[in-house]
Structures are given as C-alpha cells and as structure tokens.
Length: 460
Ligand code: 9MR
Image (cartoon, rainbow, N blue to C red):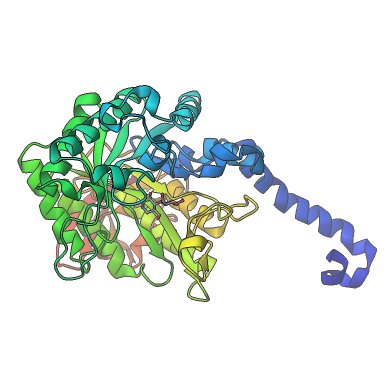
C-alpha cells in the first residue's frame, strides 16, 4: 500500500516518508492513548464542564475497547453521563418481587457503582440520566402499571426516585429528573399520553412531584428537565417547554435547568439561524434563573449531506455558544467515538456524528472544539458574566484580542490615546490587534443594531 501510493516503490524515499508519518502519528497516539494533559478539559474556563455519555460497551465488554476508551475520557472530559446504565430499563431490568414496596436490593446498581468509582477516582463530575422517561421502560412496567391506581403510580415513582437519588447522593451532581415529557405535535404539543405514567390525572403535578422527590433525596443535586426538538422555536415544543418551566419556577418547584439534547444533522440543522436560536433560548432560560445545558450533542453525517470539515465548524460554533453563555455550564456529547454511537442504528444512511473516529483517532471536530476552547481560555468568566462582560479581552497566547459578545458586531475601530485612528477591523470574530505596538488604545465597538461602546485596552 505504501509502496503503491508513494514514490513508485523507490526504497530510498520510503524511509523519510515513514519518519514523517511517525512524526505525525506519534502525537495522535499520545493524545488518544496516554491521557494527555492537553485534553479538551484542560482548556476550559472555571465553572464549565465538557463531557461525554459512557456507552454500554464500557460496562458490558470493556476489553473491546482496550485502555483507549477510559484514557480518552480521563484526558478530555470533566463530566460524564451513562448512556443507558442509569435508566430504569437497566436499574429495574429484573422485575422486583413487589414493585410497590421497592427495596434498595431490587435496584441493579453494579454499573452505577462502576461509574461512581471511576468518576470519583478521576475527579470527573457525574450526571444522572434519568429517573422518568416514557420510552424504553423495563419490560414488565407497562403491564404492571396498568393495574395500579393513581396513588400507587405516585408511590412507586416516589420510592424509585428516593432510593436511587438517595443512593447516589453527593456522587451524582445533577439529574435529568424527567426526560421527554412533551410530545412531537407540530402545532399543539402536549404532555405525552402514551406513557406508563399517563395514569396521573395531571401530568404537570406528576412532573412536579418527581422534582420534589429528587430534591428531598438529595437537596444539593441540580435537577433538569431534558428533551429534544426544544432547541429552536420552529418546533412549538419549545413554547410548551418554556411555559412549563416558567410555571414550575413561579410555583417554587425545585428545578435548576433545562437540558437541550442537540441531536443535530450536520449540514441540515445547523445554519446560523439555529445558533442564534440556541443563544436566544439560553437567554430566555437565564432570565428565569435556569441553566440551559447541552446534554446529548452529536452531529450526524447523512449520505453526502456534509463533511467532517463542515461538521467541525458546527462543533466549533456550538462550543462558542457554550462558552459565551454563563447559564450553559455543561456541554456533553452523546458519546465521543463513532465506534460506539446510537446514530447508525437509529438513522439509516447516517453515521460519524462524534469527535473521534472508529479507531479512536481525533477527527477535525475534535480539533475544532479544542481550538475554540483554547482561544477562549484567556479570560475566566465569573458566574453569570456572559452578557455583563461583553467586550474586548486580551488573548495572551496569541498576543491578540478577542471580542466576547452575543450581539453581532459590525466593526471595531482602534484609536491611540491621542484619538488617531490606527485600524479598522471588520471580521472581529477572528481576533485582532496582533500587530499593535505595546501601549494603551481605545476601541470603538459598533454593533449591527446601531449600539456603540468604547473600551480602553492595553497591549502588553
Ligand atoms: O443512545 C441510547 C441508546 O443506546 C438506547 O438504546 C436508547 C434507549 O434506551 O436511548 C438512547 O439514548 C437516548 C437518550 O436516553 C434520550 N435522548 C435520545 C437518546 C438517543 O436516542
């Protein structure tokens, strides 16, 4: 293969070629196999978490992955969630002898224990997904629940959440309490009615109760409502969700945030309009005092609809939103390697949605996220600072300045302190001021909406 594709088989050319290849390959080997200190998480500002879902093979067949899987998780991520291991379908996979008198010993906690140990040993935050989900219930639950009264439905749910949240108290820092409770009706969405819990006469009271049970069991855990197709306002589900969580906040239900799943199709769902929508939604939830985290991000490539380069740019833009918005504290991918992803089995003709390939090598998407994190790392944002701290910041690693703003900026003009114009920067997103001489300057920031602000900066 090498001979065929390189230098017509002339041996003398092969040695430098191989050496060049080794130089290229070795750093990748170190990044992916050894748990390199320069993994993604090392570029995060404080208070931010980047993470991944942990696939079933990690628990069921660890040898299939060798050491690569764990080493990558340790190097790159400071938050993880189990893709399936914390779901009721796993925890109550075996029918309890008396489901209405649940005991801790009825819960299958072996995978929970494994992930708790792994995260504690490696200083990784653990999020739990999920207590209540209409989909994929344990095989026995629908038929059993059909026999229950509403009171028994509440009793079972309370026991389950209390046992699991109590067992994980202090170890699981945040939970998806309720997952996907809103249906997909395009015009008039409602609470899902096809669920084992539809027996509750008020879906909202049932949802509230789940949050109260979880809060009582672990008052320090952050509690989330998690869903898909709520990311953009085009889907009426978003309106429903916003009204629902606003109402919960108003009534004092212990909800801390909303999880946006973000299962996007690269090249299809991710034009600028989507990014703006994400920012607007995060702001709306911030006004309610709620976090808005990205909980299951992937960008599947379907047929020839996109490329790894386009996908990388999309990952970069979403990472920037995560960094810009102070109420978006976590961005989790739904897995990190295309070797184990839900995508090909759920979407025909789609694959390759993650940031490492099948062979655990980082893809352009990995580098794009890393670059975005790296370029934003110069300034550590205090809590709730994203909007208040809009402005120009120095980026010491590149001797340039960057702009932090959720509003689009038309142009930046740089003046010296005598008021003489030094330069005009049109594409401020790329960073600017690299060639300025040391000293103080005044920058004029002109926004597309007509707003103007001034700021003094120092080039060191
Ligand atoms: O990726 C998960 C897949 O392996 C499971 O078979 C499936 C059913 O448990 O759930 C998938 O994860 C879903 C998540 O729990 C909720 N949001 C959508 C995810 C992808 O379907």
